[in-house]
Length: 117
Image (cartoon, rainbow, N blue to C red; front, side, top):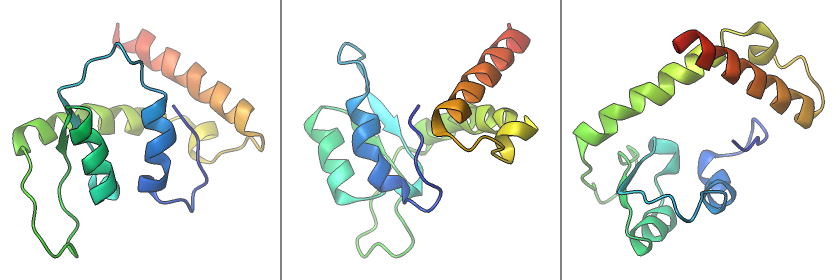
């Protein structure tokens, strides 16, 4: 998990996040939301043998197709972030320092995992 400023576009945070992936983790497809729809991201994923499953932005001139069934699996991630935002301290970002905020995110993630097990 990488924290970025609230006014930063999703696609600009892709590179540091992608570099953090474990090289032994073999991905077949990457289901990302529209914020990651850029030719550079699609090229990077394709170069590494990963199928980009990204719906095109509405202003894209050439409409690209994507696997809708794989994209539907993203709902698990969206549900997790919804559960994470139920923690008031995280939703309102009481913490001023990024490392303490990230620590509370890890703590809330552990609590969510314990509830679901």
